Image (cartoon, rainbow, N blue to C red; front, side, top):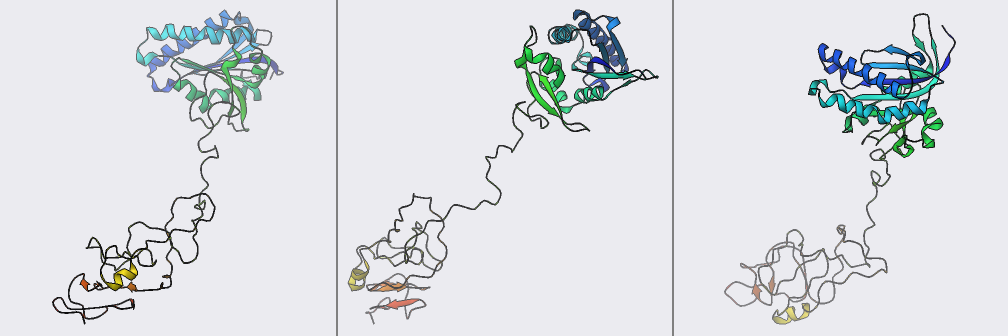
Length: 347
């Protein structure tokens, strides 16, 4: 094996190569080699300064360290997209060629079998096979996606040489067997990619920290002063008959004191009428949305006449709600109550 020497590593790979038949694959390989040669010649890198390895659907070039990496990047960014458009313009849909590319630098040795050995070369191959680079090419309308190593970005790209816009490169992190690899992707980072970071595009889903934590406690219920209940609209307790008369029937509100009926005749109606549900006590805290009132014990009876029926039909001032009444079917009665037949006098 030779001693490792510094090389510029160029890798180019055909998208969806295995989806084509043998005739189409042979055509794509010819186009790949033609585009690679023309790009290297445009960069001033002739055959004496490079070694090539055939990988079927991809090509690997080891370029002499004395060759200009700046010229190589300029040719890849400006020449290769035009060459691809020219080829694809006259090709059938099954013969369209789209490429992923990687440029890296490092030390590579050649063994006795003419194989290439080096960890820097391994890293470059992992960048080429990264899902992020594949998705970047898939989402683009053009036919070329390029990624460069951290070393190439530090030494060349970030300085903004003519034809190499530094702002068009974005940092990404690519997973590998030896841990994450930092690299720089030319063009927009693919949407939804989860192996990029440090400003390399949109953040990963569900990492913003803005979603409520699972099992978060609900807002603190509103409290009232003792003996009062939250207004609950028109809900009636179980067992209370629905209002059938426009006046004279008091609604039971969550176990609160019964309200008097407007316009009810008789002493009982006069004693009970004139007051609505109690207003909730103001605690001085900001108003919160109404919360369902928890079940609680009925409040103590207020002074005067109180009607609390668990069933049956009550009578107010001698007016029957419905049917003959012979007794109180349940609940509590305080004060003067008259129960009578439907046709006779009150008893």
